[in-house]
Length: 564
Image (cartoon, rainbow, N blue to C red; front, side):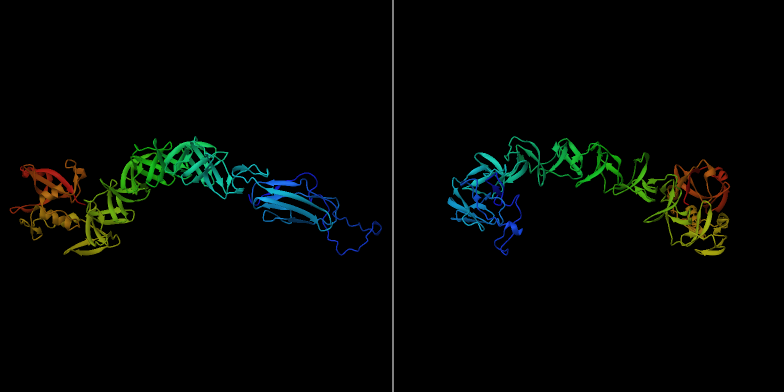
């Protein structure tokens, strides 16, 4: 307001407009005539102001005077003076500024044109107080005055019983402004509208108002118009956020995108509390299962992604129902061996491959897989695409060097792997084995050599053994560890169909019972033959399976167990 230049006089030709450019002629020859071809100098002979008096009611405001002189003057420079500059001052351009109440006479004269002058009597009185339009009429703005001076106030102030928004003393509307009592909705007239409920904008953003006041304590999702768009908007401390998150109102939790609810969202999205399953823009807290977003597939429970979960879980992913490997709540689509409460499983492309029968790895080692699951009961030799490996309790033992067997025979192992390049003899655990291209041929024939070994209760070596001591030694000689006692051997290992002999393999343990309890074990040699340490009378025998049951009618074959 203090720098505004206001024209108080009008009509006629303005000084400096529509006239030839001023030229300094001090050095030109005198007595110029039209005959010489040089136009004569035209002095200022008349100075006119359109009025003689002016009343000013606002201080510190610039008033620009208009002055008129006779046409075609050669030098147009004017001199302005005030007889009381402490009341009204004037500068070289004719701009007036009132400083205090009183009267001053403003005089204007010309450097070139003695005697040409005009004067204006300016009275400073009736100084403005309260709200008034710009007194000059140059603008339609309203200002707040005290004793003629615009008050440098930026506030929402009560004036004459009405609350107005002032910015440096000027009334401004269509905004949100504050005072010590809060933030307020300001209407087009610059007044607080206490009847307004809805969204309103200022330079800091969009705000939700109720009863004209910004609800700075409000966190909600509210319907209304923002930037000309009617939608449900996310409000934090009374302000529209324009963020991407998941936020709530009394109707639920909603997917927020660029500050408003996206009812078309079907995804998994996050807020500060976690990741959530979204359907039609809303969190579905009843959902448990897999869901997708642009980052992958996630496992949700009660609508929330289980980011702390590492598991193998059944469900539908990409339209395929399977058991999926989940790490920190996300389907991995990796190849590994992973566990759930039911065991450890072979994972391929993120899901359990129940057809896998191989030796596969994870970060903890290499594992023996049968029907997709790690078989921790298996000790023997098993293969994958890289070779045949020594397995102990389901895991490859890379430190193993010696003889070990599986259902296909006995093998020479070096550093956990069958050495198919070796042919020769190997001494292992005091016994000498013939090896041909990694295999011990006729390993059952090797066991047969111990037919006739004497029966010794509690014995476990060829110096003498009982039934379970013999079977333990027989498998141990081929790299397979089994429990010591008959009842333990009957319970461990893997069950084989006792009624389907086509499934039996040499090296299986035959379990016999009397009175419902296991009391005897034998080694199956193949071709319906068994070998066992019977008793101290008969020692170690090789018999036909059927013959033994007939011969000892008190025992019954009740199980077949496999340990390789």
